[in-house]
Image (tube, rainbow, N blue to C red; front, side, top):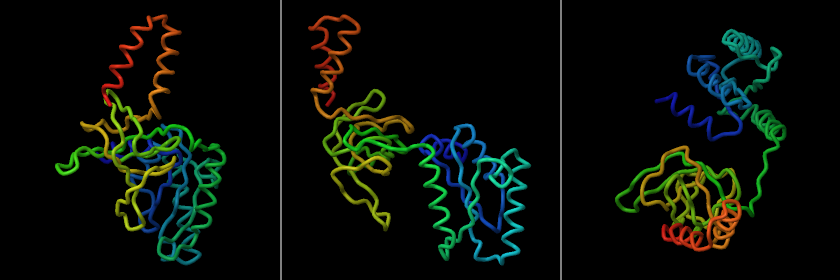
Length: 239
């Protein structure tokens, strides 16, 4: 189950931030996560946490030990001639957070991550549940463009309209919003049945876009105009 969760996370992210405790060092789950990230060809930033518990000598010894352990399993840090960035941090005192932010920013610049917020939204379904009070709701990560209430969305064989959209505030409480841009995790109410996780959900802004797509399909496949209208009726009926 934990492996499936890590695989799911790798499919949803652009950069892997792996937190390793200064008390525990490299463990089996650390190696498994590194292997999955490597298989997905994702850049890795490894954060050594709880360094506030160590003095300077202990910190240097820990870093050397972690880098040596990584190399034993076939993963090389930058200090060993590899590509894994290692940053020392303390979640308690916030020490090293600026270095961590800089490391992550560097990776996003190298990957040239960007989006077009005016484009129709695309999101990755992370989890879906059924609540007897509100029906089916899904958690997703917006990967491209902007997702809005009222958008027509398609996921697998299902199509529907986004009825409600939520983001989590600082207290992890859902807050209703009208739209959410790329990079934001969201909860939304839309589909009649639970979509499978890791499926891409895409929106059609309005019927004219859909008609334009079908017109292009007709030109490429030389189908009749009547057949095109019938296809359009079927698709719009699913709204």
